[in-house]
Image 1 (cartoon, one colour):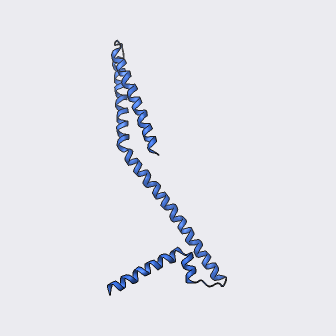
Image 2: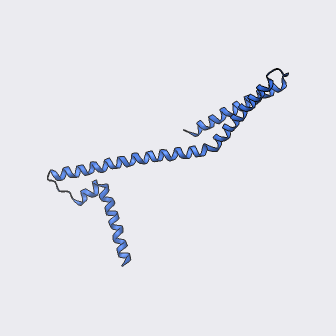
Image 3: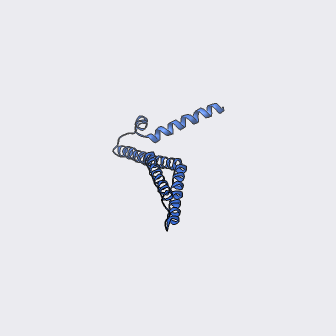
Length: 135
């Protein structure tokens, strides 16, 4: 949902509030008849409901926006993780296939093809630096 939908909804509610208020003014200005009080009460209830809806939407609009953004980010992250898993699986499959065909897998091949290997090497370098620092 975009901000424009919330803005459009608020505009519609404002329009209904104005319409109801004008109907109340017309009813007040007209000569009283049987049922005038009931009509005024109905219009007052409608006006209160519309104003309540407007205020509630204005209050919750930022919360709605934040939750939708968070949900979209979570979905994008899940897709990215799935793609990474598929890429890692394909890389592993390629390496296994090459090894089975008699080819030799070199360190350079691993560095080029395997993101997992690259991550492990970065972690190993950090570990070595920490050990040297501790000594």
